[in-house]
Amino acid sequence: VFPAIKSLGEDRGDRIVYLTAKTITRTVAEESINRLKENGLTCRNITLTSKEKICFKEKAKCNPEYCEYAVDYFDKVNNIIFKMLEKENNFTREIIELYSRKNSICPFELSLVLSLWCDVIICDYNYAFDPRAKLNRFFEEDVENILLL
Image: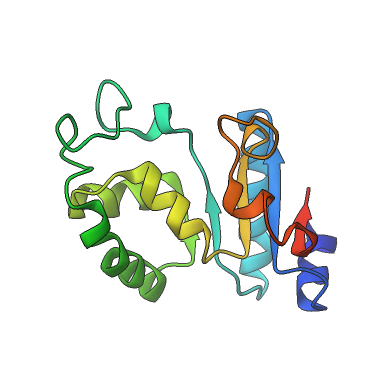
């Protein structure tokens, strides 16, 4: 992680996307970032959790008729993002769920929008390679500015 962080500081990229396949790899990446922050690193980082795992409902159906967390999503999201960026810089699943419950907003969709403001994104490799889960916002445009680990 350190060489990639150093590259960001040297303007060799805009963000790091750290791809993981297992929980242990994700945990190691999170711990590495936290350790660097303890030693002075300033950055925003997020760990993306799959829709099925982070959804508060029994089924992950993003429909306002089914899910109260989808109601008025677009009316609420910008204010919540602003509050989070003002107060936090380490966006863990727990932090995302806390703000989502408090503001009745979808945690999965919130995390995707929040990731646009982060320097380091830790996520499952499917977000880069699976056409159904792919994060087009990062892997369709401007890919030369992403440091992929």
